[in-house]
Image 1: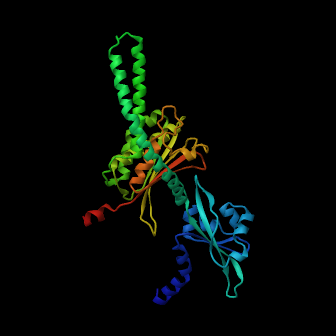
Image 2 (image 1 turned 90 degrees about the vertical axis):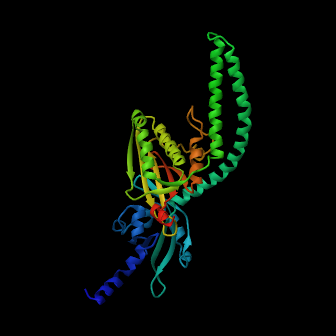
Image 3 (image 1 turned 180 degrees about the vertical axis):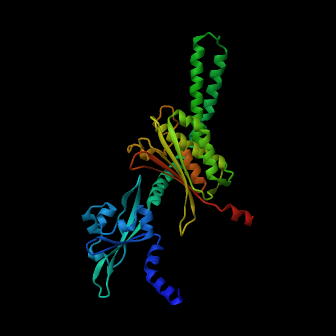
Length: 367
């Protein structure tokens, strides 16, 4: 093919290539608000071929009421792009949160021929913003709790010592000895709660280093294999083949993985499936991230408790301390990451750990 023919072919493809390079979903609509074009990013977001959307009305594609859409794209708003509302669109067994921006599509004479809709995927940022608000509140609560925990621990030690001393003076057959043993067990339970609270408020010093997330998660799941089988839970692993290394304390990250795995198993009281997904998410303007997702097939998180799951001491289990998730949240945050939770449209809950990806080879060369 001659250079001129190659150039002509490139010119013809240029509009498509330009629109496909956008980091946002792009929809073009005709005058009747029907889809006439969708770019590659849109296909990635909605998990659908753009060709399958052609001719469909925008309200059907985004699942929003017609009157709401007409309010957004009123004629006097087409002059400049504007940030509008957020919409939640079901995608397979999940959903995405999109923020549409609309502008007019006009011909040479200025007559409106349709609309261009830019769809920004804010699924993760919306969840992270909400979690950050909770985290700010928890930080203050944690600092206060640490002071209280220290004040409780000192007299608690004295009480336990006294009870043990009194028990040692009783004869083995004395019925009161059994009562005192029960007191010691409850004191030990309080000590466990205090230790967890102190860990939440003031996590242990981190010893970060390059950590292969896939290997770490695999080991934890292998160690829990018998417990999963006993609970009737099937583990489905979907790990990327790409290197997934993060700069973190492997012991602390292991604790997070253990907490989330056990929580998922306990949520599926009748058995079920736990899908553990490890993947990479690359941004054009941000660092690449490692996503570790735990999705169970249980009943999901009840709406009336969803806002409290990361609160210290909140638990729905009789013997739970309510500190597993708060500690996990604190650990992930200290490692420069984020921990979010949501219910899946098809049922079950999903917890996502997101940590910055590191290039181990590049770090070794620069060392």
